[in-house]
Image 1 (cartoon, rainbow, N blue to C red):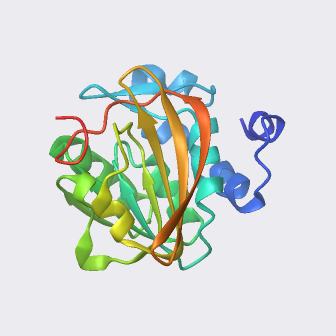
Image 2 (image 1 turned 90 degrees about the vertical axis):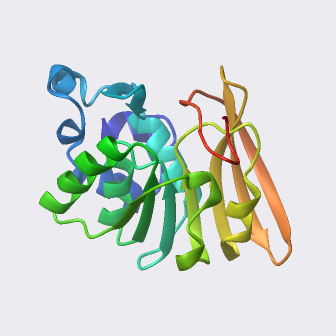
Length: 201
């Protein structure tokens, strides 16, 4: 899997090292453990998926958060992306709207020794109590960039979010420069819908 990521252009050694250490098969349901290291998204229940390894690596590399950086993750899901960020030394604050998925992910992360802050709720409005964040990563596709998330981004921080329709999205990397936001776009990603007040209803 790591060689595949390198072949597809992932160059950040910290990302590659973290993904080599976090065992992906522990985050997928038992019927899919034999496929855990394929470069594909897999179902985790409740209509949600664990993103393909390349997508996780690409988004994490684009986020560019250093050790001790504060990261807001919108969509805990299985907890895999959360664990990768934790392995890299980030202080992770993760929100998940499905309480069953959150409970399972929280137990898994605790068992593996990752100390992250989690809560159930609408991730599209962020977590203002702990803002500003050095990085915000959204693991579901939004119709537009939620304004509350840009407001909770630290100056110089990056928001990585898929934006588009329900079929295909572009990955937007949004960097805050004071009151301005620079945007880069990478096309051709597919995520489950981001549900919430500032997402899909």
